Amino acid sequence: MEFDLELDNVLKEIKKVKPKTVCIQLPDGLKYKANEIIEYLETNSNAKIFIWLGSCFGSCDLPPIKPDLLVQFGHSPWVK
Image 1 (cartoon, rainbow, N blue to C red):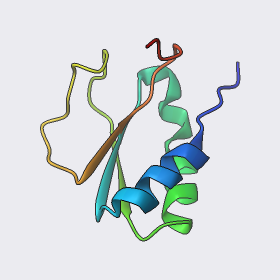
Image 2 (image 1 turned 180 degrees about the vertical axis):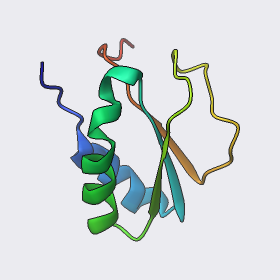
Image 3 (image 1 turned 135 degrees about the vertical axis):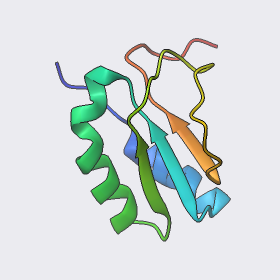
């Protein structure tokens, strides 16, 4: 199954916020996309991109680091 990671939207947010460091949090099923995500975002922005490889069981599961911007991906669409 292929996922639309909406990296253009992530890039827009990075350009708006202008963070120096960005942490991307991925569930296990999307971790294979980590290199693709880093390459795209670092090529198109001035931010240093880090992938959190620890647990990710939802938006309440925050990594114990303090990036300038945290982006969380999931398998399900966001419901408002």
